[in-house]
Amino acid sequence: MPATASPTRRSLLALALSAPLAGTVLAACGDSGPAGSSGSAASIWILTGQPGEGIRTDSVDTFNEANSDSELALSSYQNDAFKAKIRTAIGADQGPTIIWTWGGGGLRDYVKNDQVEDLTSFFSENSALKDKLFSSAFGAATVDDKIYAVPCENVSPIVMFYDKRAFEKVGAQLPQTWDDVMALVPTFNAAGIAPFSLGGQSRWTNMMWLEFLYDRIGGAELFDSIYAGTPDAWSQPDSIAALTAVQDLVRANGFVTGFASITADSNADQALLYTGRAAMMLHGAWTYGSMKTDGGDFVTGGHLAWSSFPTVTGGKGDPSNTVGNPSSYYALSATATDEAKTAAKKYFAEGLNTDATTQAWVEAGSVPIVNGSDSAFAGSQDEEWLQFVYDTASGAKNFQQSWDQALSPTQAETLLDNIAKLFGLAITPEEFATAMNATIAPA
Image (cartoon, rainbow, N blue to C red):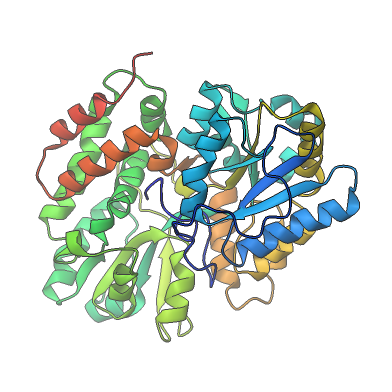
């Protein structure tokens, strides 16, 4: 999933969630006050698109009503406009007090440039807030063992989806291991059903396979060494094994014919699953909502099944580990005035992750990153699904953020380019590793 992807793909679990946030308008819409952090007033920039925009706006408005001496000036931006504006604004000391971020590599750059505040002591003073949130959400907010952003909103792990009808047709059970997966490939191909749907033209969809295979084969430590900049980390034996495994699946015709020309943005990959042309699909939890909306009775008729990624025999990864989007995040501008920082921290502590926002996200069909929020799932027609996502996220021993968000933008683009070549069998695992090792900056 690309670092430039909109929150409808990346940050929102879309059970009828927001429309795409992409846009090219560089002006804010819905400004309600000064945007810069150079004055005494605190400010916050949010992303547009419902229902997220409404929940965020209500959160700020409620806080402002209760804190007339610490009000936040709110500005809203379309996704692409925000990305085009935020780094320039921060570099010119014209950014907001509260900075929306996806965490990971982008946040790491802010930290490297001394642009965001260290919030470790804030969380020490507000331990109840930290305990309230999924522990798995803090990984992408942490740089060099210090916390630089507040997790918020909802969670979107990557999930293995299945069409029960396809499995019934061939008389097979859902796979539990990678060996099961490989054994199912010829069975479905013989039945005229593509084993896996894949929108390979989008590249980030291919990446999800490597994220899980790296974890299941090498454990969380494998990518951690890459993220830490260990020289030649991509060439480790477990890395080569994971790269080889995915090419084995490609060579076995594990993916739908022509997958490199199918886009995820159009939801064509999802359509292949719910129309019966593919038996399985590895994708973000946000696709549940669009399949429910567009797939006829596929979801409501009980034809959809789901699980986490299968285990790999002899692999080092914990079966509870998952990958995807562990949270959304807010950071605090290091150049804001003391008065503005105080207001922002009060919002972080009292206005961001409240009972009201938790309920609003649940009603929107999302799983909030709040411990115990599953108590609000009772009675929902999607209760089983929501509980699965909640259990996956809250119970993960390690929740690996999507690689193209965890890595720097430059590394991420090189990664996506080489993943496309890997899946196209244009390069070997060793050539992939060499290309990626070249992106690792010297310690």
